Image 1 (cartoon, one colour):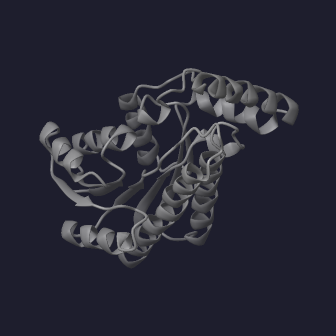
Image 2 (tube, rainbow, N blue to C red):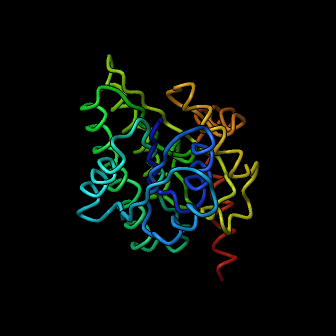
Length: 249
């Protein structure tokens, strides 16, 4: 039986993806800080599940992931989905720092363990959840967009490093998905139901895509974002930013 691990499985995309993988015959390792939510998930979805409480920024996070891999007898697919986002109108340091710790340091720690496992095994598939937000900076959450740019570039570097091996690397770039991360984002558009997003991610994994926008309409948005002149891009994001500051007052 195929074996997968989802890091960040307690809610949102990770939780929905666990159900999709179980439906398709995977034994699934569930990783999150909130173990009680993982236990609830095991009760709700039929399948073979393992659970492990891991805080991705803790010093022992890597060792705990290695333990889970050992308990499962290896893994064929590892999805690094753990991440946080914080709108930060006042540009306080704490939310910025926490975002960087989880989305950059935590992501790197989990990815390092995954890649080394696959190298020992001789094959495997690493999937990282970045974001369309990583294409350019964001006044709404500067650290979030920057951290997702790191994720995409890091995955590309790993793909180059693994060239010629049987290890695949997929960068998933969602647009707006109906998860807790977009709470309060009243300006969001083209919001994808989380179950649909999870199925699109699974399709990208099966196809072993290098980069996949979820859903495909965001590919077109991405092309515009890449070529949009600064004055237009800055104007649009600052309209949103000013709206957030006004609502906070």
